[in-house]
Length: 112
Image 1 (cartoon, rainbow, N blue to C red):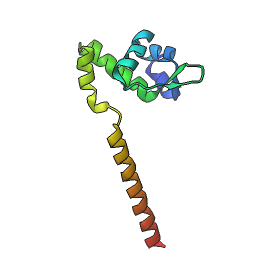
Image 2: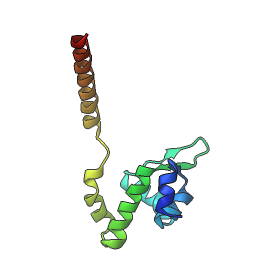
Image 3: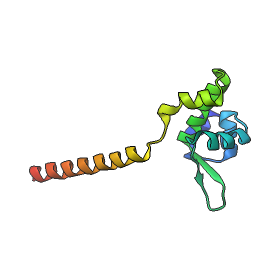
């Protein structure tokens, strides 16, 4: 198993993530808490389900820590541009979407 498994499924258990990335489960859970970029879906049973994006993030963190020999702090600094949108950015995005929707509706009215 490995990266080919990544293309076959949408969601992965922590065991799947371990097989794909080669990172121990306890490291995956620690990085989840430490970086904040890894946000698995929690099932009612409490089990984690990781998305492809989560797995790619774990692979990037692994590369930075193991290959490039960065500390956790160094890896965090490198990953800052991968951060999820902040509250202000998210509200701006919603405003942009609303504006684009209004423009689309206006253009559709003009075409009619």
